[in-house]
Length: 416
Image (cartoon, rainbow, N blue to C red; front, side, top):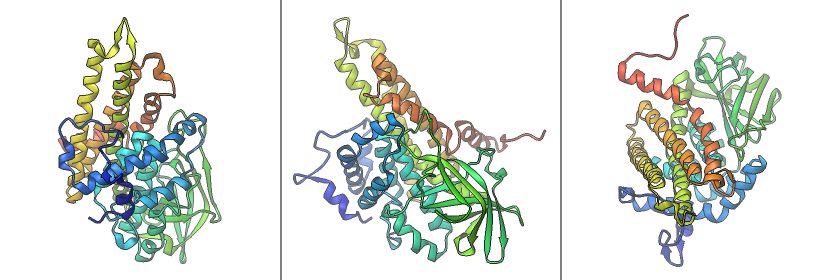
């Protein structure tokens, strides 16, 4: 695996590989670092250093004001470092790394804020992946290099006002007329909807009932983008709605191999993989914040870390994170080998988001009244993780995916 030159440059600090500095170290109780390659560690440490120097300071204020981070600038910077479309081949202007490296990047960006991981995972897994996997050669050459460099921003239009967990029942339609398609419908709760230059839109072909994918560019007649405000979660992210009214899309903008619901769901698997790693990052940050606070905060004449109940909370967080790290690492290797199943991805997304939710809540408890202050990160992670718990498949949906795997019986719907 070739490492982008910028990683090597960022990964050096005074002629020493970073990791011996005072930057964040995190939990590594089962010595997972030894299971990573030197290149993977370098990538993680380079991203970690870059984020701590360049990105962390701007996130908290953006979250507080509910003004999305400047993803134009962030996207270009992430593109320079090779953080977008990491697992897509170099022939399309992408980094050509492995899935484990993609996971480590997601871990680091969500340790800062879930909106950053959402941007990376949406760009890589929900926009670039379907173009790479299901697009024409012309589409790959046109869009992938620009997305990888952060020159343009993309979004993924599947969820609808009346259709969330049941995408097979989507109401957005596509009707072919000559050499173009007429799209009608709306999508909601779409990350980067308000700023996207291109949208991957999924619609049901009225002629055969099959779901198909289309590349819709910003500014085309009949296509409207808007931003959702007054959110209690993902406040530093751009989340919005897409509207299509008799929107005419040329045939060359249809993803030729994207036919059927399974193709759309395969894109979600990519993003869910990123979430399974990102959740670990959020949990790690909550744990480190709580641990450091408990060592310095004194009550009844002693640091609260010296009391049994606080130690029990810390140990429970420490334990869950360690288990989640092992799950994420193993899933990364299965993805690298092309062996991972949708059920294995569902398992990791479900369990690791659960542990992140637990760690955010527990860290908030340890911080007491200070736990609700934005001067500390747990309350922000706690709010953000509620979105992560729901999107890319709710906890209940992933439970039923695993239930079907175990029993061989689907329990998603009932005939009434």
